[in-house]
Image (tube, rainbow, N blue to C red):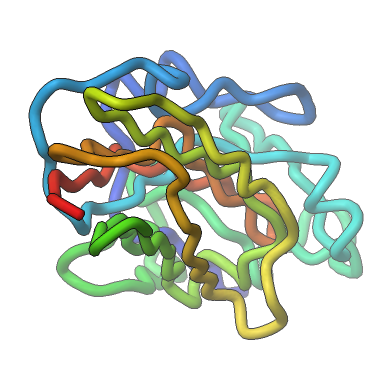
Length: 204
């Protein structure tokens, strides 16, 4: 019996806001709120909860153990089995049979936004032990003295799991200020990861 624990726990603030099973998830950051300062172009993504519907679509169950703790497990496993279960490290059962899977920086992965000329590039990369990416909610806001636009980039992830795209900007930038205003990725095991707002400031 092997329990696979996700290495890094989400923050207390994220836990209180996002540990939701099978219902709509709030974005990891304030939606489409305008920023005035450039941010880091690549930032961590953090685990923020489980999505039971997506897990079920991909052959996983979100179950609750005897302590009331949620975890993801292949739906082929009978009740009582813990083979292939995914817990947060702080929630994993205290047992010699528990195996911690991860690295020192146990976040979900990374999110990126960079600008160049009259365009921007954005991407995410999810660490494999959180399951392959399945879909994302991804909005990029760009502003300048000449305009403001929010780009809706929601969609399904490619089969490789990681994702990237570029978009052109129709208005002038002196400079442009761009950021991921909403960024969540749901993986095939039902894990939901949130972006901590990568952003960039650049001139066209």
